[in-house]
Image (cartoon, rainbow, N blue to C red; front, side, top):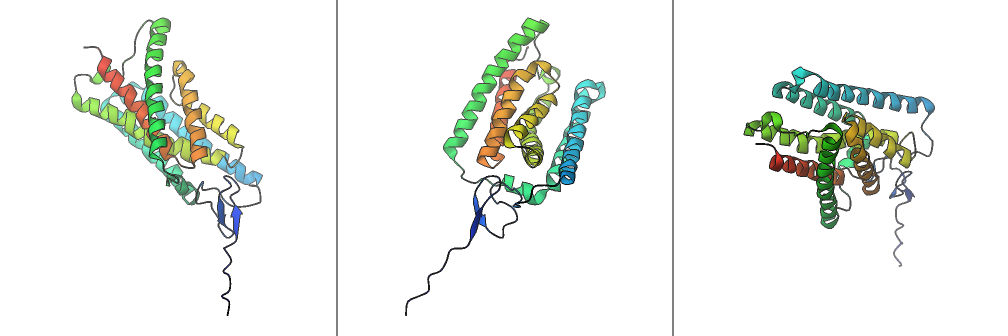
Length: 255
C-alpha cells in the first residue's frame, strides 16, 4: 500500500516584506507587519498619526528642556531627563507590542555584515568629528567639547559616555526606527516613511549645523532597518558611531 503524500502547509506572502507565512498568520514573524489584505481605515491612520505625534512632541519637549534649561544642565537633572526619555520610548514601543516585538528578533544574523556596519559607523564618526569642528571654527569661531563640564570628574565622564553612546543607541533606535518608523510604514510607502522618520530624528537634536550629517545618518539606518527587518544592526551602528565620537572628544579635550 502506497503511503499518502503529505502536502506542505499552505503559505502566503507577507503584505510588507514578502516573506512566506502560514495562511493563518496574523502578523509577519520577520517584519512584524499585520497580515490583512484590507487597507487600514482612514480613522485608524489618523489614530496612528496622532499617537506618533504625541510621542514625538513629548520626546522633543525633553530634548528642549535638556538643551535650553539651565537647571537640566546639572548631572542629576540630566539623568532625570534621560530616564524619562527611556520610559517614554519603551512605553510607546510597548503599545503595539504584538507587532513591534518582531523587530527585536535578528533573522539572518551575519557577523561579516555587522562588522561592515560598525566599520562604516566608525569611519563616518571620524569624518563627522573633523567636519563639525571645522564648521564650528569657520562659522562660530570656537570649538565645542562634550566633556568640558566634566573633564576633571572621571565618574561624570563615564556617565556622559554611557548616556551618549549606549542609551541613545538602544532607545533612539527603539523609538525612531522601531516604534515611529513602524507606525509610518502603515500609513505611507517605505520611502516616505524612512524620509519622514529621518527628518524628525535630525530635528530632535536641535543643532542646525549637524543636520548635514544627521539626515544621511538617519536615512542610512532607516533603509537598513527596513531591509534587514530588525533594529539590531542599527543599534550597533548607532553605538559604534557615538562611541567613536566620544573617544575623539576624550582624546582631544582641552587640558
